[in-house]
Amino acid sequence: NTIHSSTGESKGSHWRVLEIFLNAEGWSKIVGIQSADMILGSIFFPLSQKGYFTRLRQIIDAKVPPLVEPTTRAPNPLSGCLLDFLIQPIEFACGTLDMSHRNTIVKSFRQEFLEPAYSEPIINFILPCLMQNNYKIPLLCMLENNEVCGRNPW
Image (cartoon, helix red, strand yellow):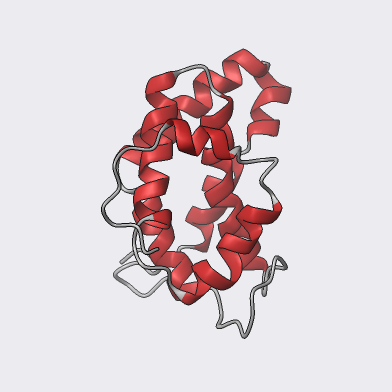
């Protein structure tokens, strides 16, 4: 189970560890930009290969509360945190010079968030936030890594 352990215990502490280790600004301050890029690549690349975006989509669908209309304001603190977990690897991928990392991360994101049918949290929270923050996630990066997509919901 992605949200709770087999004993029913919350995985909130696991999310906090991810929040700390995926923070690009923190790494840049400690080791410099180039080393931070290498460290984040060594984290984001294997995570995206092993279903990071699949599990994140499951958590978002389960934990973002129902929304009546599209919004860019997180309905609760957890929703804002989950949005950060989504945006951080995409920002990294669009800024890294390692094309293998970039392509793998962008492809994984696209396959889990842009190609399947959109759930209510995706339509009413994630997509509006991505549209509002397009300066953080360049569309060109997505288009450059686009392959033939047969599963687009639109």
